[in-house]
Amino acid sequence: MTSALSGLRERARKNLDPVHYDFFAGGAGEEVALAENERAFHALALLPRVLRGAAERDLRVTLPGARASLPVIVSPTAFHRLAHPDGELATARAVAAADTVLVTGVASTIAVGEVTAAARAVRDEASVWFQLYLHPEQDVTTALVRRAERAGCSALVVTVDSPVFGRRERDRRNGFHDLPPGLAAENMRDLPGAAPGKPLDIAMSPALSWDHLRRLRDVTALPVVLKGVLHPEDAALAVTEGVDALLVSNHGGRQLDAAPATVEALPAVVSAVAGRVPVLLDGGVRGGSDVAKALALGATAVGIGRPVLWGLAAEGAQGVRQVLELLRAEFDNVLALCGGRSPADLTRDLVVARATAATAAWGTSVGPQAVRAGEGSMPW
Image 1 (cartoon, one colour):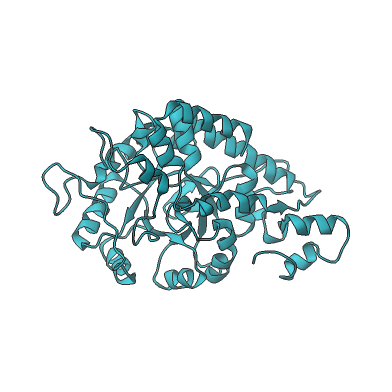
Image 2: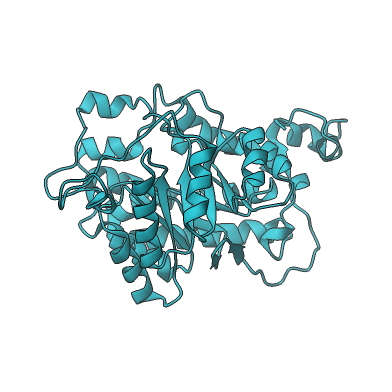
């Protein structure tokens, strides 16, 4: 993590109620997956190319229902008004100013229509995606989709890694179960089955299946991004089911604590998809080199979650914008140092395990050629 980002995190810690800081910062169980997301990036090195004539770089990427000025989007995170009074409105303004994609969702403390309006007040063509969980009752899912459509969201991000809630020990110790008075998951208000003016609970169900995803596809023409895929067989099946993109994610280490780091799961998912749909990644991205490593391993873009919350809690919209511009500058620098003109120039042969990089430097037989041939100590 860069010193600037670490500084924002420390300012956020000082500004936040300790219970709310733990809610944002914590993970499931012993927080192994949470830590592994970052550690796995540190275990990888970039093997740069030289003399490739890249005087200027174009960081733009094309995504379902959106174009972004850099390959970093804002992944869905809950309850932004716990971090700052303006909540998701501040986040939306900052993301729109940075000209990238905001994923807002059912756990937003500002309704989706207000979020998209705030984004488009800054940039007419601002891209907002809507994240949801498939609800056991189809009419609830349909009502949420209609709200996203009316708000002008350009894609749906369906989180599928939560048949039940993860066991989050910090929240249990702190007794954090409910939002403070005056705050709610605003997108869950006035849905079928809810009392007038009251929000429904965000329901999880282990009975959810691919049939529920098919029913979702039947009620909307919006692109669908499936979030929370780690197993390559699920990735291949999702493509056959017609999803428009996959987001490799372990929910920021907040669900299955035994799950692998997302960057470790990424190559097998990319291989299973075989270029048929874009693959994105979130979890553990803390700097421009992390962005470059994920793209070199086949991701089209990455999502960030907690760094946005640190920026929001530290400085509101300005802090969120600072996070995004920091990642833009770092990624542009790394791309130049790797000899690239665009994200497409980052290829798998540029990524090596740090042990492999060291042996390559000493001229032993385990080097980048072995990596390209699928040998050596790489995790894929």
